Length: 453
Image (cartoon, rainbow, N blue to C red):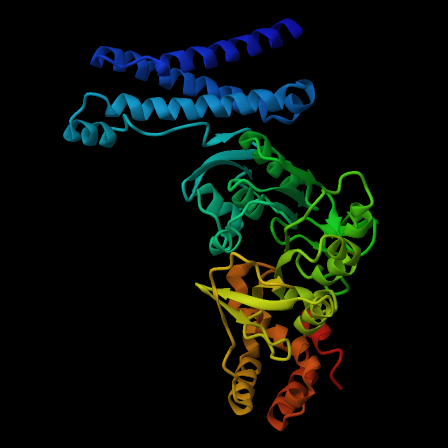
């Protein structure tokens, strides 16, 4: 076995050196181009086969040099794509180039579309950067994975403009790496926390394939260190709550970032933290007070999912009250503007990403906008409208699926408990009484109205 392994390593190294030498030689004839094209196609097939094999779980355990080979294969793939472009561009007219491109001759193919049954590896474009992305196999069809298979990032790329200077990030709830890969591709290094075994495994492969300086930590971030119960559900995995009690919960490891800070793994600096953990954001923040203070309160991007927060007994007000007590101001990014968030206003939609700044970045190129206050009568009318469409709440097919987002108006029930001026309004109070008296088997609606009497 060791002899075979040495032979594989030797062949790959030789192929890499040969390709580099070939690429440096001038291309002088169509015959030369044809021979090169055949070599390129052949090498790409070898790369696909090698990558498919090395991504298999047993290969990861057998070969200690797996990461080095994957990185080497990536470098070779980049060189092959450069050669493809060079083969087409030398001594050809524009019409010849167009014809070759249309025939697929100039197609840039690296080790994308490789699958080992556990993960698929695709190639994605992020601005001028090309990245390789390992995605959980095709039986997982959430919107994030589906977009990734098409080479798309479901990610607000304006964030890369807000934070142009590379630094160190912490990605809490990394999933398959939409945030991690996007920032690492821009030169950032960081730490990606992910509770799901499948997601963490896929993300590790992406990190290796792209040779990123990112450490993947397979743990949930919480307000304590130890064990916790968690349900794996693609990008919507969540920590056990008292609402969804019939889920397939499993015991996993969790850690508070304050405890992690005391470990040998913690970095020397942190510039940005992203938190998206399906309602457990408040718990995570409770467990990182010391870390935030140590690193002078890094910028934070945080998801406010009112529906998921309710599952954990929290609201937008409790979330933003905690961040406000730490000195942060919340903003919502819309285009080139940052809108200040008023924590005393009920969110108009159940899921929003907020940016939290203690001090605005020096390189910030957005304008700060104060939202125009909505008259009470207009806002009360909006709340009444949401409550009046409650029949749709019972049509939820499954918690967390964004295709059901229009039906998530039920979050308003729990959010209202923080706003007595609204829930004591005669019309709103009347509708709440009607909902409370109706027979309902929806555990979320029952939980959301526990405060109302």
